[in-house]
Amino acid sequence: MTSKTTRSLNETQEAQIVEEKIYKANGDAAYKRYSKGRFLGKGGFARVYEFLNLETKQISAGKVISKSSLTKSRARQKLMSEIKIHRSLIHRNIVRFEHFFEDSENVYILLELCTNQTLSELIRRRKRLSELEVQCYTSQVISALKYLHAHRVIHRDIKLGNLFLSDKMEIKLGDLGLATKLEFDGERKRTICGTPNYIAPEILDGSHGHSYEVDTWSLGVLIYTMLIGKPPFETNDVKLTYRRIKMNAYSFPEQVPVSKEARDMISEILINDPAARPSLDDLLAHPFLTKNLVPKLLPASTLAVPPSSAYLKQFEPSNKDDPKINKQLRSSSQSRMSDDIRSTRIEDGKFTEREAKSTNRAPSRNEMTNSGSNTSRKTASVSCYNFISGGPTLWVSKWVDYSNKYGLGYMLSNGCAGVYFNDASKIVASSKGDSFQYVFRQGGGKEETVAQHSMLNFPTELQKKVTLLQHFRKHLNIDKFSGEETNELIYVKKWLLTEHAIIFRLSNKIVQVSFLDKSELLLCSDTKMVTYVNKQGKGALYPLSSAMETQNREMAKRLRYTKEILTSMLHPQAAGTNENKPV
Image (cartoon, rainbow, N blue to C red):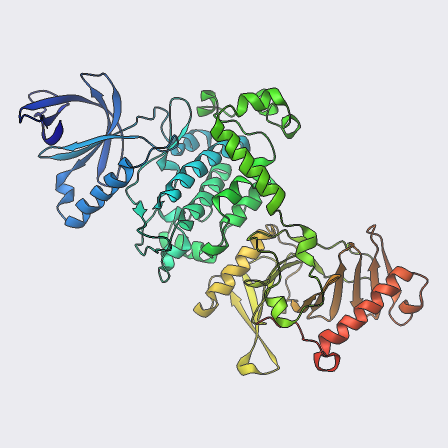
């Protein structure tokens, strides 16, 4: 039989009864009767109630949309698009579409009823969730997104309120009112839509369109919100929220303990360049989701209280290889498949610290521009130097090489973050992160110009570079700022990557050489001293004038190598090699 039309009985005649009129093949009419019960919630133009099928006794969530709100053709078109997309989807982590019909007053969409409300209500009760819970929910959301994207569907409204919990505590992604389906691979959508706190920067920008990566961005916001208790960019003013999103301006509050793995995952997702965000498979392989066992589902008690310590203990890393626990937690073929993907990604796709700092030989300018791995995620390298009396008081403490796309990001020992861009311009933030200096050459001249700006007020043409600065700051986990504020910030003036080391020349004339074997040299022209840190991390000071004659052969060998490289770096014409100015 086919549904043609329906009617709602007047509530004064028969309260809360909705009838669907169905025409049989022979033209006769029949009716399905539903009892419209408890109000569940509302959103947009819809109100949601419990609907009981009086014949089958099946209970559904009934989405009721008044036809008076669909007078504009665009509104009705959007509703029919939502129905068309949702009814085509069948996945355990997506709210099941059951049926739709209409009468003279309303359109009714019957959906799977999720009895445990949404993650929004859960966070409202619990304030924030444990990492194990976030791991469990995140894995399920990724599973739903992988299915959607495989079917060319972008959800575009991933948020706490659209993630429902079934009676089995299983995540169900719902509300596809903003979803869209791509007609072909590579298509870009340009509609500005989404929920302010979760909206991706490329949607706000609108100039290049957007695709699946907007869901990944919203997932990063979701993970942060579950762990911290509020969204990362939230303010009382929507315009300010949008500005913070465009600037990637967020931080992790000190009072909430968050693991390094969780911070890393969020930082890798919340990147303003959508092409640089990790894939969903990359996320499944991320240490945050693989460092310990993750339950397939959580106990219903977590709706009210955090998991008990006894419950958490069975998922600790020490139990990861326990076959009994593994059998309990990974019973389905789907779970086993996910685990296979994760282990393969970790084994084959991990970018090591050694790869981050080395190439096969001394690089040319083009090679510097294209250096690095093909992977979108790179591990930050860390200096082995710790301050010793008489040695440099400022040095590059952490760095990551993204010169295959943007440049080199680094953190100084005083907490300042900086980037040496591929166009040879530089940017460095103050230790408090509220202002920055931009260093560039005007009109191709040799003299550098230094411009000071506030993080909240700077030229629009610097937007992308400020955004990248914020990204590198998060990637290097710079949340606390230390050091004293100065009018002129120190920055990396030049840098070079060789077969054996990475070399930094700072604007205060300190030269820092970090070797692959973990030894390090720091040369200071002001004090005429050289600091040497051996492979075991022990540091010592030597006068620069006599350092080559020292009995320390390992240091002397590194000094000779550094002298040769510095000659190439500072006088490229004489040495026959290029200065490192990636363009």
